[in-house]
Length: 355
Image (tube, rainbow, N blue to C red):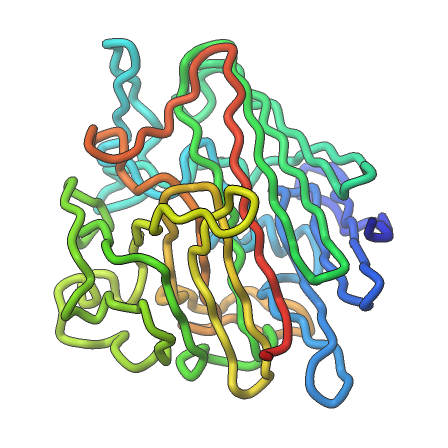
């Protein structure tokens, strides 16, 4: 069991207090989470030269997170990623969700104008870690049903950070929660991640247009820059003359994870490594997809920890999820939560020195 420390993390513009919880294991590794957006704000591990390295991009206080428009470190919902036109159909009824992205705001992304990453959660310490809870009202963001979402952060002595999700609703609704942390294995202050390496355990990806909306096609990665089945330098093909990369301004796509459970029902989704710090990050999940995003639209503007401003491609995300735009594509796995059921998912990130 990790030791947990609670401390103030500042206040939001409306005066509400935000708390930070720090989990520390026997190796001295520390993970920080806050009640605003259930965000992961730091992950410090012993690195080269016996110095601690924080591999998570983030800010120093609640006020800065409130200004952030990148969902940095947040738990995103009710539906992570994009839905075309913001329209979903449940039981024959069409619901119009908030349209907060795309040209003229025609699509829905990350739960709407005030998704779960922009909400104040309650928190409690448990034997397993820190449990955060948020109650989403019927109609919030346009979604049907009163939903209660819970997220449990746990840190093992083997530097395994587990994120367990649960949700229930009093009506049929949509549920697709993820974590939107930006990682930099050389430390949050290190600059672009292009020299770091990535491996994604997927033979296929979902084609997406210039608004990052899949149209239902699931394509093989063979012979394309989307083939990351072998450990590949992130910068090697990121700007290739390939439609997906040109439209996405780099990697910002969903890969369909191989359905091969590795540990306790979890599938290995991705592996990243840095030759500079010697750190590796492995991602396991129960979810069917992973969005590998290389921070193509980071642009600074808000001072982060120690005044660092996070510029383009200074972090990468591994967002485990149902496929983007799934409600418009019935051939995709569907993120439907039925009334009375419990939606469950788990993602585990393992941060360790390279063997």
